[in-house]
Length: 134
Ligand code: CMP
Image (cartoon, rainbow, N blue to C red; front, top):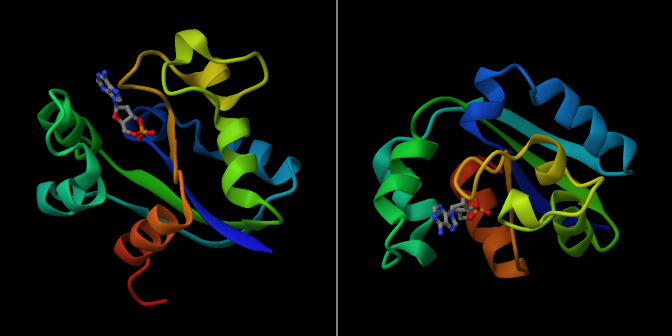
């Protein structure tokens, strides 16, 4: 089994959609091995999204991701990193395929419903930030 990290973003938690999204993930065969609802402070958010620090949207991204609670999930499944990204869909919901989470729930490039780790290195980094006790 491979592990990965998925995060339900603030606009989805505010809208009460976290339950639907979690159920959808479970129905697609991912096992939840840890889960936590929390709110980022700006420093942790900056660390989490450190690869985007030089991007023009970085400041807005930190402001958005700290605007309310998120739900972080540690998931396990064979080939989990690739498969969860397929289930999530493209960054821009307008380009996402039907059946993906961002097609169903995403509203814009920024408010795209969920985040999924994109490599084994980002899985390790992101899990260590969200679940430091593990
Ligand atoms: P995520 O998969 O969490 O990774 C980085 C996030 O930055 C991305 O989803 C979007 O929420 C946001 N993002 C990426 N590109 C842009 C952009 N061009 N403008 C605004 N936000 C963006």
